[in-house]
Image (cartoon, rainbow, N blue to C red; front, side, top):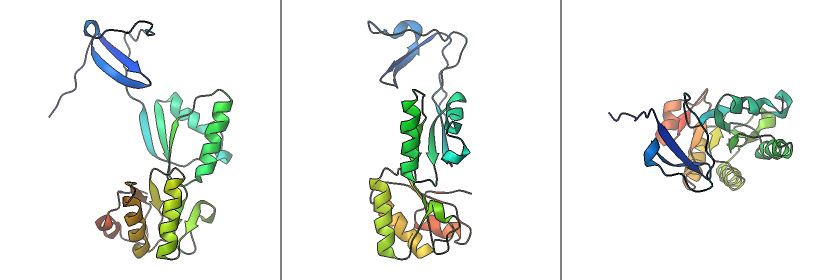
Amino acid sequence: MAREKVYDNATVLIRNNRIEKLGPGMEIEIPAGGERLDATGKFVMPGFVDLHFHYTPENGWWRPLLFLANGVTTIRDMGNWIEENEKWVAETKAKSLPAPRLLYSGPHLDGTNPAYPSDAYTLLDEMDTRRVVQELISGGATSIKVYFRLPLNLIKVVIEEADRHNVPVHAHLEIVDARDAIRLGLTVSSM
């Protein structure tokens, strides 16, 4: 098992928001004009990621900012319209406030009589399913979420179409057996 190195006196060189070099303090050369921050007695850690978050403006436009305040720099919204998320990011930046990095799944994909119709696409057949998955991915979705009333045959189509674009498929399943969906290639099953 690999052991992480811990340096008592380290230098971390960050360029363009990416860690470029890390090592004992005297071994890392700081470029001319580089800004120096003294983190003596502190820990330097990457930002945390919350992979299952639900945001709606009615819950408070400021809510995602709480994530930043607690070290969560990336959140994945698992069921909201991408346009609403993008609008929130633009409004937050217009206020000169920091915004976490948002990953989108877009509205969840459900079958007939969806549980949350205002946050879902109701899929009826294979052609409709492929079209919606393609639209979500071309609209910025970095993952797709299927919901519990979507039948297994359409979950299979979602997975096939998302796989063509290297986009993972997640699920909130109650009616379909998760093991069946996992055998088809479901990435993560969540509650």
